[in-house]
Length: 274
Ligand SMILES: [Zn+2]
Image (tube, rainbow, N blue to C red; front, top):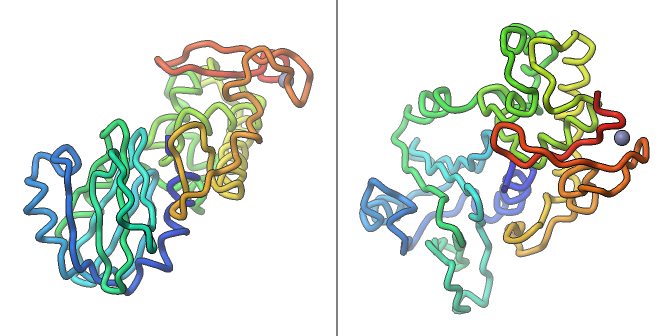
């Protein structure tokens, strides 16, 4: 948390307020956000940068500046970005950074657990940085059952671990992995190399369907996640398996079970995920 749909919801909410604006003042209060770099130096470097676009790759927010530089933001566990219109003076003990834009509005970065990161990249550094860490976008055209075959066919790891692999499915985390496997009717412990072409197709469809539903519901708010305007998401009321141990499956009525796969709490339906 937050995963692709939550980050995308924040991106969509911020984009019209950020693009074309210049960073007038930047204050970074938490050195963990920019380490190993000095937060004051990063803040000073950001002042005067004008935003060209706000993109997303996997769970990263990509703030592209007209200078060619990029501010790469990862929200990790509990990070969020909030637009503060008039009530910018409100005290928030979890505010780690604040950006004053040239139209007078503020964007605040909030993070309870403090695992989030801000990384300022020079022109040309973004692509190699991301290429080392994440694969293609699961909602993009390059992902297909055929493109997955050669990457999954040799892997005996359980399906849940493969779906969480950011090099295979950038942006998918624990919630949407469980939901995707339910939609695909696939058991989280199935070894990847046992999947038939039809099942690979169902997996791609399940992942896309779960992510699209998450975006349509503006993400899932379990605790800290908020959209850029402070609103909660409603995906949590659409969960088919995640967090529903003992409750009936909405497809077959069997009680949802919880197990651990690859160190992560994993929910599935033993009735229809074979
Ligand atoms: Zn079921």
